[in-house]
Image (cartoon, rainbow, N blue to C red; front, side, top):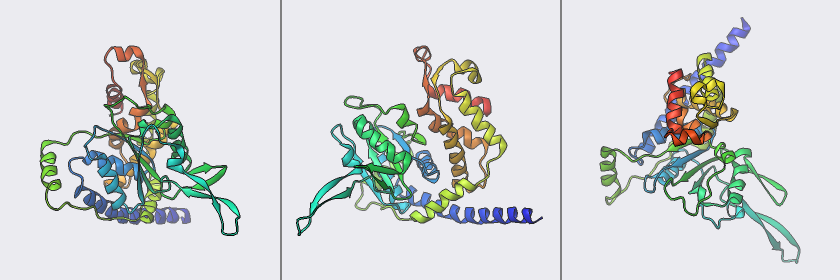
Length: 334
């Protein structure tokens, strides 16, 4: 009986915490919608990524408010946000920081570490594929391990720490495509599409007048950390876990994918399953629910799997796309 009581108490704590956090999240969504128009799906997926404690890759043509979104997220979530414009001549030290030689009045010399822009709670890596592989790999350690190493010394990054990177899908000249190992570090790849007509009409009036709406803070970093802990405590039903496993495993080459598996050259590893487990819970919390459903798995399948898969040459020659293959895989569990 005592065991049942403790379980019920834990459930009550989770329910109360979820109700309180849901109110905070609603306030954040409202604050963002006052500044960003017509990108509801993008905003939702970005918030799911952050609530999951992960990083996101935003892909879209210039002028779709990708940078504005990241700035707005920083303000509304109460995070210390910094931006780095990636260029081919950007060095790792430009992101991480460097040691400089100081000389005291007494003539004593010592090295002092000057922190780079990576020491932020929300780092915007603008046009990340323009930086050299060496610079990209420096950011990779920060994203995965939440600390950096400079001159043999470890420096911990602030908590929470999130990278929202942007990429232009059109201009490929002078770019260094992200290696698969780094793409896998991103919890989601979020495609930023053109706004619909009504949203674009609103953008015209709201952004070209004498006054523009400024983003307002609706949450603190501490509240966000509490929300991220709560996400990890939300229960996930067996049917949802099985749907995640079926989807991820069928997205790999081999027998589990059936006929679709023959189209896939390589597929997602276990990190994709981990991303799913966190993201479906975060999406449920975002909607004010206490447990995720199979619909969450289906809706998040493309942003979580798309950048973790590649098709065979034969499949590409026949006009198949990763999105089409994911749609076929989703149809099986839907």
